[in-house]
Image (cartoon, rainbow, N blue to C red; front, side, top):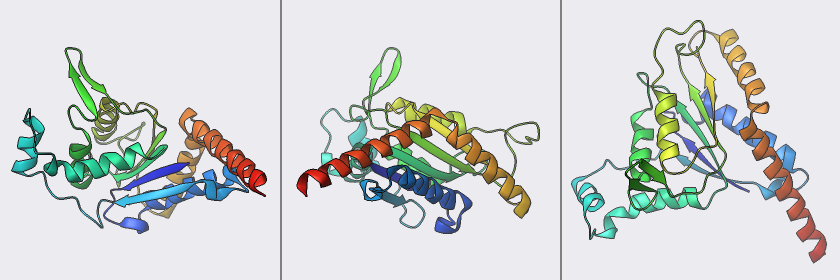
Length: 224
């Protein structure tokens, strides 16, 4: 099983969300034991290696009936990373109520007409295969539940964007109040762990990891 980890946090590996993503991968390795090597993680760090901004040539190519495909190199690379993976884990902070600029660029390159979605009278129809997707959202404030003090535009927007290319099996894990002290962080992580293991998306991923382990074990036995 091949997992694509998209990290949009400017804090990189030091972010709570990234460490939680690593914890999730570890849990999946546990489900794949003893053939943990059956799981491969491909990482794209959007903060450490920023994507180039959308330029005029790309914008013209997207709207052209006979585009110069050379301008789609970045887009094709990002789309190819999704196509060759079985699952996605996205770690993103909430910046000013929605996705950070780094993740928005990734979305702008991966949502491409005639490539990842088709335009129909009923709206955008995704052309990509659905796959389990876990989105970890880190925020300093609180935007969900009884203590919410701000609006969350990130969750509905990202769910709609992913659905537009065909990815509908999405689980959001909210790490809220991350600037409110260690006790609040620990509480947020514990709540996310409970939500994670009880959700159909993670259950599906865990089952897939187990199947991959059995397949790998069977291949090893046959070659022995």
